[in-house]
Image (cartoon, rainbow, N blue to C red; front, side, top):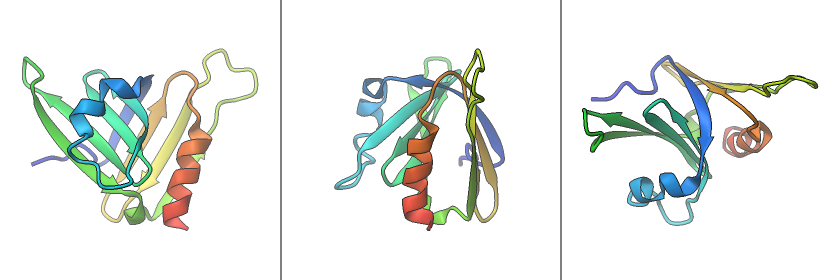
Length: 125
């Protein structure tokens, strides 16, 4: 099975939500909405208003996919690093600690990291 989350560093670039909508619609529960989506080479990460979903694109054709989800309620700790004041490339980071593992998300380019942090805070605090 999957270990897509475990102690992984995702180097992400924002993508349009329409690129992932068909892939995840069957996973979403009532009232759940995708908020932001990102790509890491082939893999994708989706932040919804309830959880994080990773889509591990597998095989040569990319038709086989492994979906893994982690609800925000299982987060023990998280930290956010915002870009500096006059950085040419406004990168930011999100570190999340779960019970048995951690995940580091590195965002390339402008990302509203504050929105992600607020959503996580709603479930963690």
